[in-house]
Amino acid sequence: MVPDSTQAPLRGPGNVLHASFHQPALVRLLADWAPADSAAPGGDLAERLGHWLNVADAITLRSALQAVPAVASARAARAPGAAPDLAAELQRQRSTLSASLSANEEPPEPEFALHHQRYLMGQRRMEMAIDALREHVRQTLARTSPRLAQLAALDAVLDQMLGGREQHLLASVPVFLKQRFEQRRREQAADAPDAPADAWLQAFAQDCRAAALAELDLRLQPVTGLVEAFQQETAFSA
Image (tube, rainbow, N blue to C red; front, side, top):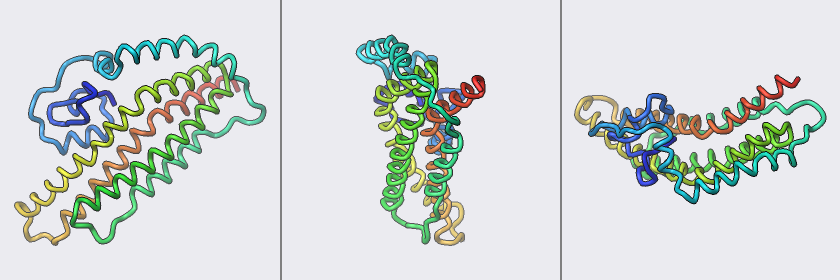
């Protein structure tokens, strides 16, 4: 996720929600919920990423990149035995978190505060589980080959530099959910007054699950890339 500035957290209308062609599912979903009110800003990916990296960050990143080959040479030593099945570990974690986030809420809660609390708990579960998995995958890559050790070291640096800003952006997702909550309530009152009283709450519960699963997919993208690189490397060297 690349915002237009560190001061623009997922502000949908006319912002980064409509800015790029290849958008994560979470961004597209929130864009569908937010009315567009202005044109998307210009600038390519590199330009927008530049708003995340100040001069000090750039110096830190350059220093880290220069140190990566030495770190990789020192750490990389292929462990004996069969390569671990990181893809299976990733899938197990995805399935576990998906099931947790998709759990039904019975009965539907009429107050947004309760939905908000549940969503924040889901975000914390995702963050803790995925951080642990990502670190495990990095350590495995660092022991596999110099090239994968370089990738693991680079991922660690980028995670340290950009992870906090990504978390700041994801923390704004409940803001969109609150807007959606009110929108669902207004729509039923105006368009379907004869529908069951809790129909809009059922629909909103589905919205919450869709947002949580899309966020899970987004959070898993970095570790998925690491696992795919590991698979390619081990398949090539087998």
